Image (cartoon, rainbow, N blue to C red; front, side):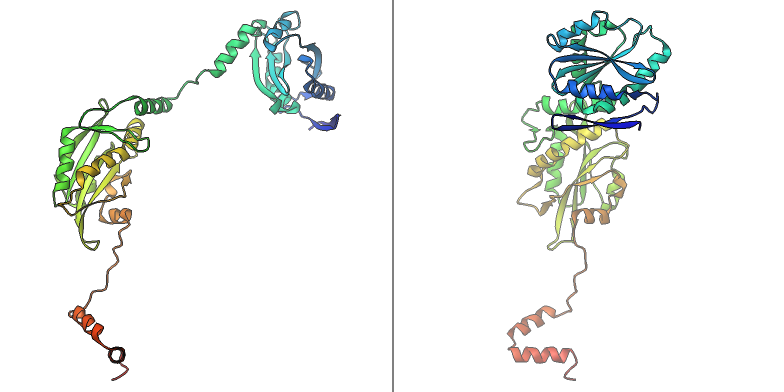
Length: 376
C-alpha cells in the first residue's frame, strides 16, 4: 500500500486506494485516480490514454467522444498509438461501463511487454474492477478497428469448447430431447424428464413371467447403446445370497428381483427394482442408465402387478455402486423393513386372551395379581 486519498464528487465520496503491483512494483498516480473518477461521471469522454513513466502509471491524453464507441475506435489510428510503444487505453462505452485496452506492439521492448502485462490487474483494481466489463489485448492498431471489435464480441458470445465429459453430457441431453420412441411395444416415460426406452420382446416376456411366478428369481436387463433398447441379459431362479455376485461388476444394469419373505405380516413376495452402476462404469453409460431408471421402473409395474398373485412391487428402488453388497441385510435396510423379533405367544395364549375378555373387571385384576405372585 502506497498512499490513500479521497476524492469528493458532488456529495459522493470515492475512497481512492493506490496499490502497488506485486509483480512489477508499478503504482498508479493519484492524479490519474482523480481524473478517472471525473471521467466516470461525464458522458463527454471516450478514451483515456495511459503510460508507465518512472515506475508510475500516468495520464497521457484524453480523447472526447464523437460518435459510438465502435466508430470512435478510428480515432486511435491517428498517431495516438505508436507502432513500438506500449500503452493502456481506457475506453468508456456507457455510464460506469469501461473497456480496458492493453496495447503492446510486437516490436516493443521485452521489458516493456512484461511490465505492461504484469501491471494490468493492479491498474484495474485501483480504479475499480467492477467498472470494467471487458478487456482487449492488442498487438497492433489493426486489432482496434470496428471490424476487429465486432469479431472480438462474436468470439466472446460463441460457445466455449467442451471437454470430453461435457461433450458426452451434451450427447445425452440431445438423446433425451431429440429421440422419439414409438411402436406398440414401446414403454415411454410420461413423468419427469427421464428417457423413455424401447422394450425388446424378450425383456417384456421375462418381466411378465417374473410377475406371474411364485419363487425367488431375477431378471437382469441392459441398454443397447446403439438402439437405446432394453435387452435381456439373463433371467433365472436365484437365492438372495447369490443375487449380488450374479450382477455385472464393470457395467450398469437394471434388475427385477422377486423375493418371497416373511419379514412382513402377512408374508409376501416382494419385487424390487435394482439399479446397479459400478463406480468404474463409463460416464456415458452411467448417465444413460440413470436417466432411464425411473421410466423403466414405471413401465414395469403394469407387467408385474396382477390380482391373481401375492406380489408386492416395492415403491423403494435400490441403487448401488457395488453389486456385491446386495445381500439380505442390505436389502432389508434399504427397504426399511423392521425385522425386530415379535414376542412369541405361549401355547394357548390366544384362548387365554379370549377367556380374559369374558372376565369381569374384579376377576381380571385378581388373575393378574396371581400371575405376578402377589396372591401366593
